[in-house]
Image 1 (cartoon, each protein chain N blue to C red):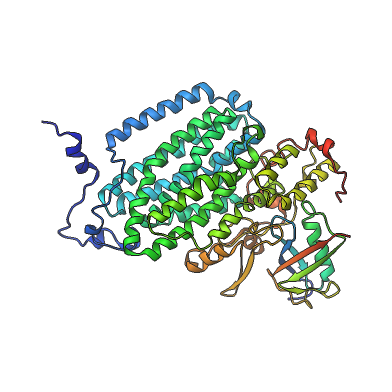
Image 2 (cartoon, rainbow over the protein chains, first blue to last red; image 1 turned 90 degrees about the vertical axis):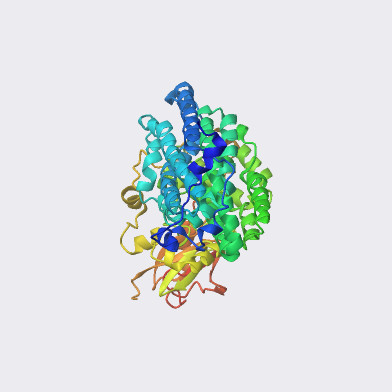
Length: 498
Length: 84
C-alpha cells in the first residue's frame, strides 16, 4: 500500500539520525556549521512553511523553465531588445552582469548549508536552494548573454566577476563573504533573511513591475520566475534567526546590522541607478527612496520587531542616505563611465524636475553638478566624451570597496584611519565599525588605490581601464546619447565650462 | 621622503560627489595642491575664484609647502571653493 503524502513527506525532507560511533560535533564542527553550537535536540523543531518534496520541486521548476523558454521564443529575440531605449538596456546590462556569477556563488553557500545545516529540513531546503541558484545563474546567461553578438557590452553578463574592474572588486568583496565565506548560520541570516527577504525578494517584485511598464516582457518574466524561487528558499532565514535570537541575541543583532548595511550599498547602486536614472521617465512609478521606504524599511522594521531585534545602530544615517548615496554614486559613475561596461544617461530637464520633486531635500545639492556637465557637453559638442569625464583616480572604501561617495556633497563622510602602520579609508562610520569588528576578514584586501600604489595596477586611467579593468574602447561605458540631447541647446545656461 | 617624492592624498571638494586621489610633491605649495584638486574635480564642480583648504579643522596656508603644512601620504584634505 502506498503511503499518503503527509505520511512520507517528513521522512524525505526532515531526516536526521543519532550517531553511534562519532560525536555530533565532529559531524557538524562549529567552525563549518556556525555558532552557537547546539545539540541537535535544540534544532529539531526547525521547520519552514513550504514543505516541498524533491519530486514536487522538479515538477514546479519544469513548468517554470518551459514558461521562460516560451517567453524567450516569443519576445526575447534581438529585435525585441533593440526597440528599448538605450538607458533601459543599460539597466539590463547592469543587472545581467551582477546576477549570474553572484547566483553561482550562492550555489556554493547553499550546498554548504545542505551538508552542514543543523536540521534535516534545513538541509533539504538548502539543497533545493542550490538548484534554484544554479537556475538563476543559467537564466540570465541564456537570455542576456546571448545578445553579445548584437551588443558586446552584454558579454559582461558572464565576464564581470572574472575581471578586476572596480565594480567587480566591490561585488566580489561582498559576494565572497556573503555567499562563499559564510557558515550556514551566517549565510541563513545574511543571505536568506537580510539580502533575500529584506531586499531582493521585494526588489524583484518592484523590478518586474517596472519592466512591465517599460514593455520588456522578457526581463519581467525572468525576474518573476527567479523571485518565485527566492521567496521559497528565503524561508530558511527566519527559523535560523529565531534560534539564534533564543541562544545568542547579540550575535543575531550583529549579523543583522552588518549585512543590512553591506547589502544596502550593493542594492543602492544596482537598483537605485535603474529606478531613478535608467528607467524611461514616462514609465517611472516610484523613486528609489519611495520604493525603499514602502517595501524595505516598513517591511524590514516590522520583521525585526517580530524577532525582538532592534533597528541597526546606524538607522538614522541609513534613512538619510536614501536621499543621497545612490545619487552621488550615479553622478560619480557618469563621470567615470569608461570604467564600466554599460552606458549612462545624462538626466535632462524633465528628469531633473522629477528628481527634484522626489528628492526635495537633497536634489538642490545635485542639480549644480548636472548643470555643470550639461554646460560642458554643450561646450564640447556631441561625441566628445572626455570633456565630461574624470581623469583623476578616485578613492575606494577599505570595507565596501565602492567609491568614497557617502555622506552629502556638502560633507563627505569618508574618514582616514591608522591601523597597524597602514592608512585605511572608509566611506562611512558603519563601514569603519564593521571593519574593526572583524579585521581578520578584511585586512588583507587591497583597494584599487592600494593596488596602484603597490605597482600592481597602472596609475594612468586609460591604462587602468584597458589593461586592469579589461575594458576596450568599443565596450566601455559612454553617454547613452553621445551628448546629442535636443534639450541641451534649448536649456543652456551659457555658463563657463573652463 | 624627499621633496620630489610624489605623495597621494585623498581630496574632497565641497559640492562634489566623491573623494579623489591626487598626487603632489612635498615641495609643492598648498596653492598648487588647491589648483590640482580644483582641476581634478572641474568636470563636476566649477572651480572657485578662491578656495580654502583644510586638513581636519586646520586651515592650510596656501603659501606654505605641502611638507611644511605637515601633510602625509593618504591624508584627507578638504577644499571649499568660494565664488569670485
